[in-house]
Image 1: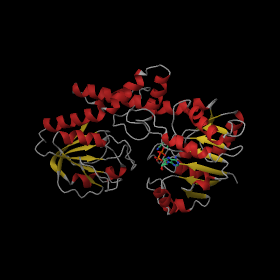
Image 2 (image 1 turned 90 degrees about the vertical axis):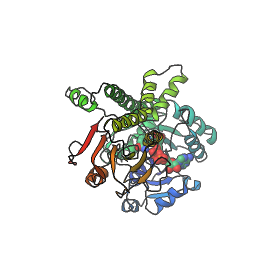
Image 3 (image 1 turned 180 degrees about the vertical axis):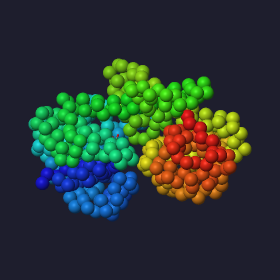
Length: 422
Ligand SMILES: NC(=O)c1ccc[n+]([C@@H]2O[C@H](COP(=O)([O-])OP(=O)(O)OC[C@H]3O[C@@H](n4cnc5c(N)ncnc54)[C@H](O)[C@@H]3O)[C@@H](O)[C@H]2O)c1
C-alpha cells in the first residue's frame, strides 16, 4: 500500500487525510503539537469531523515528528498561504514545508501542492527549493503536481468528494498518476490541466472572480443607500432576468476570497501589469465594514433608537455555519461603532466564549445581560436563525434589525420589529 504524507492538518488537509486513508496509508503531519494531540484524541476544533468519524480512520496516523515522514511515496502540501500586512504573499509556511519535504524526498516521489498560490509558484519557488535541498531533479528523480482545494468552509453540501478536482503536473505520466490517485476519492471526477500553471491560475481566479462580483454588489449597495433605494428590492427585480448574477452584499473575510486576489495582483505587478479591476474589488470589499457601520449608525439615529447606545451584533465568524474567525471583518465593524460611542454585544453560538476583544462582549449562549433595540444581523448561522425567537426575547418592544443578507424575510419574527435590508 502506498504511503501518502499530508503536510498541514487544517481545514484542507484533514478532510483529505480522512478520505485518502480509505485507500492508502496516510500520515497527517502538522507542526502544531496541540492540533496533533487533539486529533489523536479524536477532537477536531474546526468541527469538520466528529470523534466517531476520526476514530474510524484506521489507516491514518497524526504526527508532528519529522521522522514519521520517512518512506513516503507521495507528499501533499496543505499549509496556509496568507498575506503580509502590505498584502503581498506570505510564503513562509510553504517554503518551510518544501524544505522539510526536500530533506525526505526519495526516488520517484510525487509532491502535490494544494495550497492556493499564484501561477508559477509551484514550479519556480517550491520546485527550486525541493531540488536544492534534496539535490535531486524534477522529472528525473521526483515529480511535481498542483491540485487546488476548492471546498468552502462550513459548506456541508459541496464537500471534497463532490467537487471536480483539477490537476496539473510536471509531465504527462505524473498527470495520469495523480489523476488516478484523486479519482479514488473524488466522485465528481478529475479535470486534467495542460500544466501546473493552468491549475494554479484556475484556482486563484475562482476566488478573485467571486471577490469582484461581491465588490460590485457592495458598491451598488453604497450608491443605492445614498439614493434611498433598497438594494435587496433592486436585486430581486434584476434577478428576474435569466443571466443576472445574484450575488449578495457582504463583509468579505476569511482565508480565501479576501486573500487570494492579492496573490494574483502580486504576480501581475511583478510582470508589469497594474490590475485595476482586481485591486478595485479588494479596495471596495476591504472598506465595506466602514460603509456598513456608518450606515447602521445613521439608521439608529434616524429612527430614534439612539437612546440605547448598546447594540447587538449577530455572528462574528467570517461566514455562516463555521467557527472560522480568520480575517473576519466583523471585528473592524465593531471597532468602528465602538469609536462612535456604542457599547457592543456580539452573539455567535459557534465561537468559543474565550475569544477576547476590547471592543465587544462576546456571548455564545442567549443569556444577554440586557435588552437591545438595535441589532445588526451579520452572519446568518443556521443556529442563530433557528433560535431567532429566543434572541427576540432580548429585544425592546420596538427594535431595529439590519438584515445584511436579507435572510429574515421568511422567518416569523415579532411584528413590532423593524427589519432593514441593505
Ligand atoms: N479553508 C478552506 O476552505 C480552503 C479552501 C480552498 C483552499 N484553501 C487553501 O488551502 C491552504 C490551507 O488552508 P487551510 O484553511 O487548511 O489552513 P489551516 O490554517 O486551517 O491549516 C493549515 C495547517 O498547516 C499547519 N502548518 C503550517 N505550516 C506548516 C508546516 N511547515 N509543516 C506542517 N504543518 C504546517 C498549521 O499548523 C495548520 O494546522 C491555503 O493555501 C488556503 O488558501 C483553503
